[in-house]
Each structure stands twice: as C-alpha cells, then as structure tokens.
Image (tube, rainbow, N blue to C red; front, side, top):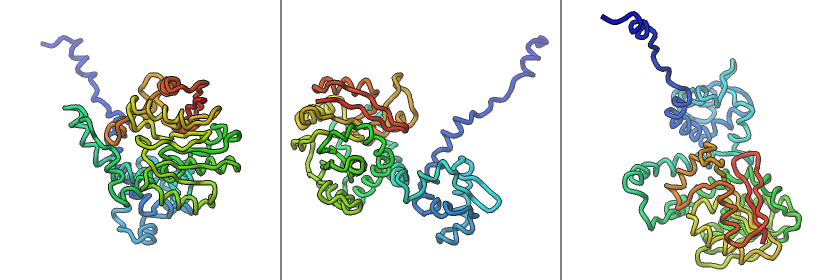
Length: 342
C-alpha cells in the first residue's frame, strides 16, 4: 500500500509544457520557407502599401488562394504578419527587410539559405560520424554556373549592403584615397564607401566570374571612373595596392592558416599608414552566441573551410601579420569591424 506522501506526490505530477523556444526551433523550418516564398513571389511587396486579405493578394499576384492562405497563416503565427480587420499587415519593424526595393532587403539571402544551404545540411551527419574530409572545394557549388553565381552574389548583396554604410562610417575613409575590396563580390561595401567618401576610388578584387556583376553595379550607381574591378585569385595573384584593404565576410570562409596568408598579402598591399578592415559576424567572448553567428558558423562548416571567430581572435591574426593599433568597432547589427594599422 502506498504511503499518503507518495500518493500526494503522484497526484501533484504535472505534464511537461512544450517550451516555446523549442517549438520555434522545430517549426522554424516552415517559417523560413514561408518567408522565402513570400519574398520570391512579391507577397510582402503587395502588402506594404495597405492591408489586404489573402484572396485579394492571390488575385493580384496570380497565386493559388489556398496555398497563399496557408503561407500567410504561418507567417502570422510566427509574428511576421499581423491580422487586421481589413487583411494582413506587415509590422513596421519588418518593412525595411522585406521590401524588395529597400537597402536592407533580405530576400536574396533567404533564397540562398533555402535553395543552397539547406540542401547541403545533410552533409553534417557525415561530418559528425566521420569528420569533414580534406581537400574540399567550397566555392565550386556557388560558382558552378552563371545562375548559381548570380544567386550567390545577390545573397551577398542583400546580406551586406544595408549594413555597409554603418561600417564605412567606422573605417576612417576621410583620410583614404583608394580602397581594395578583397573578394568584394558585386560591390556592396565598395558602393557604401564611395558614397561616404567622395574623393575615394575603389577596386573590387574577385574571381573573373564576378566582373559582369561589378560592371552592373558601377552602371547602376553612376560610379564610372571610381569603381574598378581587377580579376584574380587571392591564393595566386598579388593584391592591388591601396590604403584601405577590406575583407568583408571573407576570412570566415577560411581556416586560421589561410587567414594568416591572406592578411600577410594584405600587409604587403597596404600602403604605409593604411588600414586593413575585417568585417565579420563576431562570437561573444564565451564562444556561444549570438544566435545568427552560431547558426552561420555551422553553415561555414558545410559551405566553406572556415568558421566565425571572436574579436580577440581576429586581433591576434592581425597582430601576427604585422598590423598594429588594432581596434574593434561594433556596429548596431550583426556585422562588425576589426581594423589593424599598417
């Protein structure tokens, strides 16, 4: 016979409550896809001028009503849309990031996550069981054809352009004459730098396949004579000379030894008194957060040979390469500046 104490304890047992943070993690897969579909099909753009029901949006965009309704319900459940009497509303704080005409638009980046990164996450199981094989060529998949190259460059533009103005303001460009943006893609940081410093010129140094995208950027922003492109491979070719040498989301693609080689090359290319600019997500000192850095650190393991680092780790790499007066200048978002002086 159970004692009264044991019976009372059994009566007081409570079913566990499914934690909200775990619910968001499990079902976040669907939310990410819903965001990507809404961006790709112009759904957010259609809702920006005024609230509208799903039926009206479906009619306007030529989309299936039932499918769109379910996508909007997912976005509403995730707090990314609000339901009002006259239809769905895009919250004010989300508008700069889902408006395809805004500088902070993230549609290209989310498309890259869904169409490229997600398809490769299955490789992590093999890495977990057997380790990551040596000799991988991380950028073959990203540049394997013209369409893949365009998707990747658009993702990098969406990821970098909005925050680049803030980083340019931290880069002491008023004393600079020529910026070399190493692996600068279609030029998001170069454009921000040229806007911030009217007397500055810039060169994007990247693989030959990137050249046409830089040409389009030059035309789009009216930067003829100021924005140039030098094709090359930074493992084989000498970097162009400048007094600002920038690496934006580049060093996180590579292991420490390769970063040391790239920074040594930057030291040779950097004019006396110039700066090298490392622009990256940074881990907190405990190496755990923030979430975006931790998540992209796993992505780096699949898509590149690198990892994300703390500010102290980048300062150590800069110092070893011969730079001095290193500083960490944090932005208000998730991309920050670590600089070293030549």
